[in-house]
Image (tube, rainbow, N blue to C red):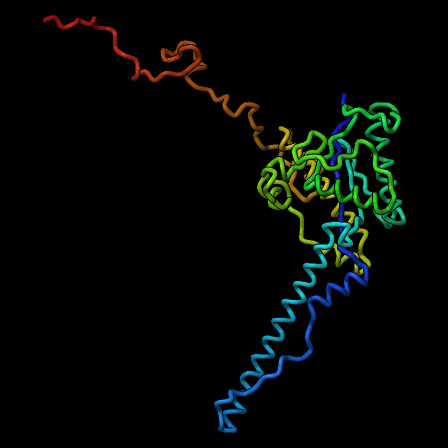
Length: 320
């Protein structure tokens, strides 16, 4: 018996390194004054010159505001994009995981002390519940493929790589079974996004959840919460819900209904007791083939009586 699948989600935040952030702000400056304006050189009337300058000055102020807003938005996007890679300064604030249908556990830098301790605690716990409890203690380095748990998640291939890169930088040993550089359809990971739309497609988890009837997440500014010092409750809740959504999607894609507890925690409505249960086989609909006395039944297939040739009268071949 293989270990049950492990659903994981990592909350990645953009860089808060001052030097990196100053470099981003410097690349998208905000100007205090508009560019100087000049009157049309063809004008000679002082009144017309003054009116032309006034008109161009007003437009310069509008252009200044628009340019500053564009630069601010570009700077924020570039800053948020740093969360995509440790090489850009992105880092992991929390990792949530659940083994099979079990309880979700969260490891975060506030509780664990720092990113290195968080990763060590995550791998230690993951080894305990996927190896020790299910297969007995196995010496590290002698872990056959059969013992490797499948990691489930949305964008799980990128998540496992991000975690691996962070571990290398922080000198945290990675388990020998941890999937590094595996393909999108490897049997060691199950990416709900890739499995649904294909290796080259991109489908945000909210869109996928909405399509399959899973409650969608409320918009949240994770980086803003952290920057304002309100990081723990909001980010931890986000990590828990990310695992609930990925696990629900995985169950749907593997022929099972989502856990009721996950749907309720995500804000969904539990099914009513008055609802009619769905048939096990949607094609198992009563019809003529279910009546053995029906004349149109043959080998279990219904046949329209009008299609049966009338053989009550004998046929007579035409004779010359």
